[in-house]
Length: 150
Length: 193
Image (cartoon, rainbow over all chains, first blue to last red; front, side, top):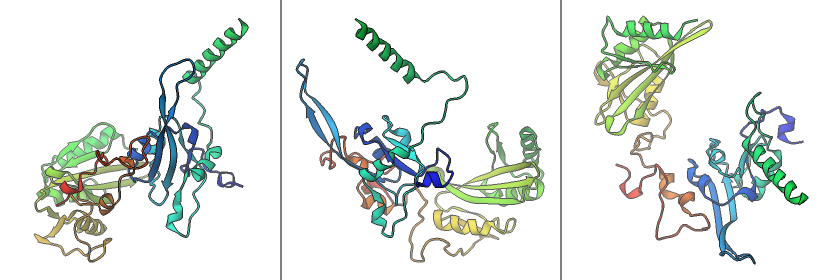
């Protein structure tokens, strides 16, 4: 049984920061904004060769290390706010206490393991306009349906 | 329940005197009412809040380092009544060279603790009858030198540890040619007294 099931914590509790590695572009924004200097990111660049249709080779960043030091983190949520790709979000799980302070440095596998426990966002207000992502997704789906019929 | 507007009127009336404390009342309409007083009328202004306005609950007293402006001493006092809390912020600006102000511990005994803390963190002297009180360190170890909440105090951990944000995206080690600096942290060479 997880912490969030045991205790009725509110959905937006700041327990631990969960990492969705696939969304991270190693842009360094969170590490730079962190007032406690507790986020460590290593990454390298990889070249994606041009496709058969031509074009140019592209470089992309590959994440090598993402770690948060819970002994320094002050739970200010600035990294979660600043992430442009929603790679970080709060989970109501709790980082366990450790006998050794060095064990509070959690690497990306630990941070990633909390991603499933991130609660869904709060429901929109009654009569709020529908989210833009929904309209965009429906437009794409409609276009695909049309092209499939042809 | 006190209507906020009424409270502002009462505060203005009290601080217009007598006794005149040369105060200016700041009211932005939604936040806390703030009263700025010259440093030499600090004790009178706090006494007026206690005796004249009935703000008998002392919440806290601390300071803000305003760099060239000096140190701003801030004190929050309140009055509890069923269904309403009236509160007020008292502020005064102290000279940077030798920040000293009258102690308000004779009005609020509990303020002595906060004055000790402000003394060790900001180096502000608190006076009684013109004599600086000998305030014992409260939180810092005995051998500690300097006033850690002053902005010119060098934070050792910000000098000793490399900034994790110094790397560019796609880098594993900060490049040596160009070293971006963490916002708000000056170069160690130009930082500190």
